[in-house]
Image (cartoon, rainbow, N blue to C red; front, side, top):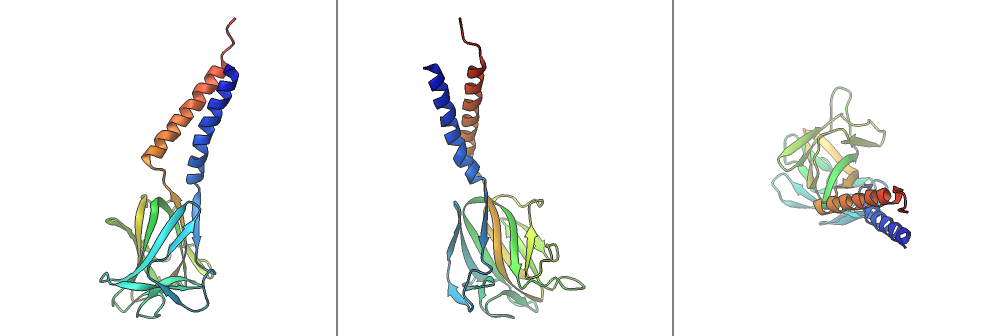
Amino acid sequence: MFAHFKILAAASALAVLTPMAAQAAANTFQFYGNGPLTDTVSVAPNYNAGNLGVTVRAFDTTGKSLALAIRFDGLGAFGGGLDTGDIDSLLGGPAEYLELTFSKAVKLNALSFSGWENGLFGPIDQATLSWGNQSLALGTNNDHGLLVKTFDFSGASVPAGTVFKITSTGNLSSFRLAGIGATAVPEPTTMLLMGLGLAGVAFTARRASRPAAC
C-alpha cells in the first residue's frame, strides 16, 4: 500500500513540474514570409506562439498612433518617411517605432529585421531597443544574414519585461520587423510550486531508498 502511495506522490510532483518545463520553452514569432504581397493595415493585432502572446502597435516619435503595416516581409509603421510601410527615420525627422506588449513577462532572446542594411563603412540602418528606462543600440551587431538580419540578445543584459520598443534612428533607416524570439519568465508563485514539486520528489525518493523495517 505504501509503495502505491510513493508512486502516486512522485507522479503528482512530476505533473506539477511538467507545465513548468513547457512554460520555460522559447517562443518564436515569425512574420517574414507569412503576410500578403501588398500592405494590409491593422491597429493593434495580437500574435500567438505557444503559450505566449504579443500585441504590436506602431507610433511616430511624438507618440501619435499609426497603423501597423503587415506584409510578406514583416511588420512596419504605415506613415511617411522613406517607405510608407517601413519603420523609418529620414534626415533627423520624426522617427517611427513599434511597441511590443507581451501577455506575460519575457526574456527577449532575439529580434530579426528585413530590409536592414549594415553598410560597408558603417551602419545605414540603426535602431534602439528600449524597455523601462534602459536601451540598447542596434547597428551592425547582427548576424549579417542575406535577407534577414538577426540580433541575438542571449548574452546581453536585457532584463525580463512585458513592453519593449523598437525605434528607428539615424538619417536613412528603413526596415521591417521580421521575427521575435522570447522566453516566458515563470512568475514567483510558479517558482514556489516548482520548489515544492522538487521537494516532494526528493522526499519520495529518500523514503523509497530506506530499507524496510523488520
